[in-house]
Image (cartoon, rainbow, N blue to C red; front, side):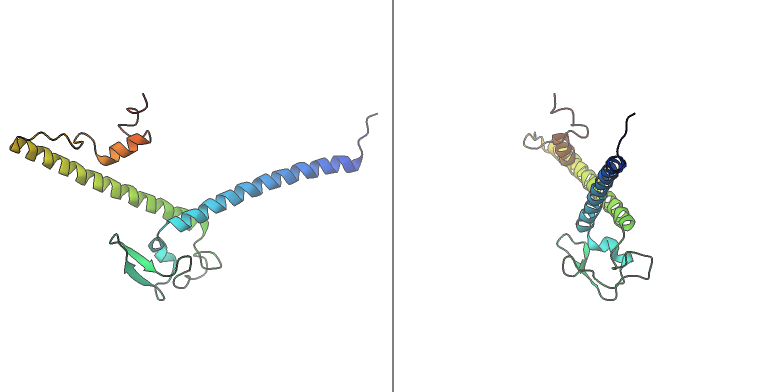
Length: 164
């Protein structure tokens, strides 16, 4: 008859459940760390709806965009009523992720607008060069700077060109 002491069997279960708990804890900590990193990367004005503007002032940064004036890392203004963030007045994880998506979308739209503007300039330059009878060889009039830069990391229409 094969007998396993009861203490040995319960310690094996305990070790495996402890390992699972430790793995889950690491995963949660990693997710929470990345969410906090996102919070630090998103401009504070994206959270204006989560904070009262009574104690904050809006300023203009070097890019001409509005930004909340305050010390880095401090909460500017007072938190909204209960249920709109965490107990300490900071935005909750869902709010951080939502604002991160909005911020990334805004940045993509800005890149698209600049890209369209660059295409317009390229077309104008090409027309002027034809009218003047000048051949332009010192700049790339075939691809935008965004296409070239994305091509360096293997994305976009030029993504496969540098890898073969």
